Length: 284
Image (cartoon, rainbow, N blue to C red):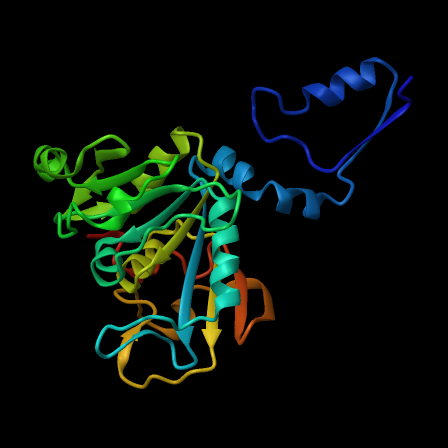
């Protein structure tokens, strides 16, 4: 007895795109498509990104001081952001397929990268470690979790990495590398083939710069704390815009208080500055 169907957005999957609408229309059912389309696409942004770009949606999260530092000069970074901000990140981890960090973050912070919310789901925990600098005893590899940990290294180091790190719950994979650096764009396409739709890129500075340069970041989320550190580790390293007009442009900007911090969010605009920064999205 259905007389009318309202559709937010059309499924981009070429295997089914528009076929359901055609079936409904053949059955003489009225169809209204594209109702609140932007909002519907926003709810399905990760899935749409994987279908259209062959990779998951990349969300770059950073916690920094007001002067753009993610750690003090000594390397200490605990805790820049407020408890409310950290709780929000745990909620994001619950919603993402994976969380990605670089070797430097594991060495400096020894994080677990789990979702510490009651009833929450852990993401797959990915460590980019081209030179095998992280300790096999690091918590990310030893934490008990229903989700696996993945160490990503170069083909040259694959055999040694498997000997050192591989165990139940820890997978070691090789990704295409150039000059000893992981090609993040190709790695993300591998994650797309695994069916992942959303990944949270949590740091540190070198990974942030490489991810932005590689064009795999779709949204940024910067927690800015009411602190000034002076000398310290910059939030983004290794990404060099030759001119101001070459900078990556953000759209759909939003700002809101989270605890004592401010959360600044934006979408990386396609084609605006992307491809005119160096290096070419590689990280070790």
